[in-house]
Length: 237
Image 1 (cartoon, one colour):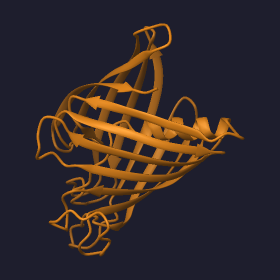
Image 2 (image 1 turned 60 degrees about the horizontal axis):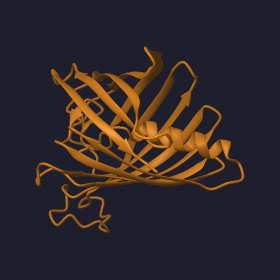
Image 3 (image 1 turned 135 degrees about the vertical axis):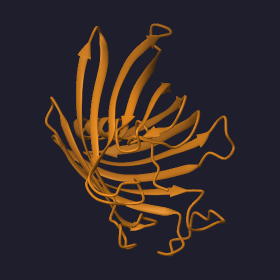
Image 4 (image 1 turned 180 degrees about the vertical axis):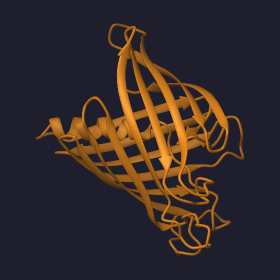
């Protein structure tokens, strides 16, 4: 049920940082990722996908639209997410409205927000980037959330530590993420480590003024006993 973008957090933090630096200008982000598989927080959410991003930012405040559509399998979930975020210094906070074409509403209507019949999931996040590492916490607070062991709303949550570093002229990111309690959204019965990932990114220069970031990541989910290897690239003006 719970799905979201693979590189969205990185894009959001970069957008917020750019907006904060450009104090008197509105920043616009237009980009798109093409990925061999859609892996999110240690979960396999689909095969090869196109994932566009459109965002605007001003003085640390940003509004971002992100989507995903399968390229190989027509049955892959279609997704549209809207995130309102604010970044100041290393601190960031935001709210995301996730929408999927599958969920409680079999017709996949976007503008249906009935608590017991919507395909939307609403999540709040808070975090801090210390430089050598960043910490993030996410909690679902409304919409089509998962349930706990008692069948009640789980307020599904996820926390992660992100450590960027550079090795052999390549940008790397190590991520460790965990779900603190039971929820059907992540398939956990209690505290569980669900995401151990290592990603490498390198710009491939096409011309003197145009390059394409290419990335690969290996992801392990100790909770589900699954592992994945994904490749992708980003297109942007």
